[in-house]
Image 1 (cartoon, rainbow, N blue to C red):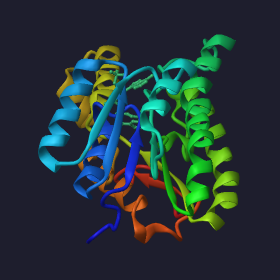
Image 2: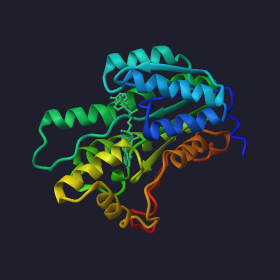
Image 3: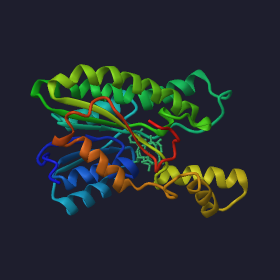
Image 4: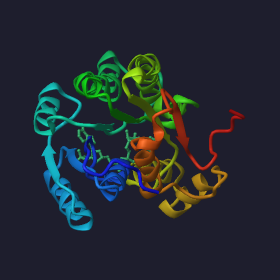
Length: 259
Ligand code: NAP
């Protein structure tokens, strides 16, 4: 399918690895020029080079922390006028509801709620002026079904989801869509670190920890960054203009709901 977005320009934050990289690769395969970001320059530059070589699109890489104002300013400055925004950042650490301090909550809200909101506030006016834009936020299945040990994620991402629900319906009249993608478990470094926590806590090896988690997923496997990216590219395409303010779950059926 021709996604109809060749030549457009996308900013994909937190994209040197994992789901952000999956989105960047799928957009590049559709002919979209990219601005990529992560904190670590080495992996970021390697990803940028690999995507340039594979897809022949323009790729600018900006090493910066997207969760603080100075980092965001650097990234937005390098990005300039963008047609597509994919927001992403690392997830908050696991823990217990009773352990988190005000500072922990503020850090999580900064990273997983206020950072994507600030990026949208920066990108939306230009998209509205030009009458076309696509925003996809990478959130989490924790928005739909809370994950007990990820209470910081449950909390911060719920706030982002509320902002998107209201804002998406205000900007849609200008040809601009905002949607969220809610990953279940995908085979990335993040999943490895969650498996490693289970492995240590239960005294089992990593393979056993993964098998145990896979058994809870109807698809009996982890998702891939490639299939996640394909959905992201579709949501950023010309075909998705009537998909507004939705929360698309990609979890192999793990969240047990009828709707
Ligand atoms: P990942 O494989 O660990 O990759 C994270 C990427 O984000 C890396 O490129 C990392 O590079 C970059 N990054 C992290 N913090 C950043 C920051 N402050 N500023 C800029 N870049 C940053 O993670 P993932 O699995 O793709 O997960 C992406 C998001 O989806 C996370 O928020 C995660 O919580 C959420 N999620 C993932 C899963 C899953 O199963 N994978 C499930 C539910 C939700 P640097 O470290 O070099 O900055």
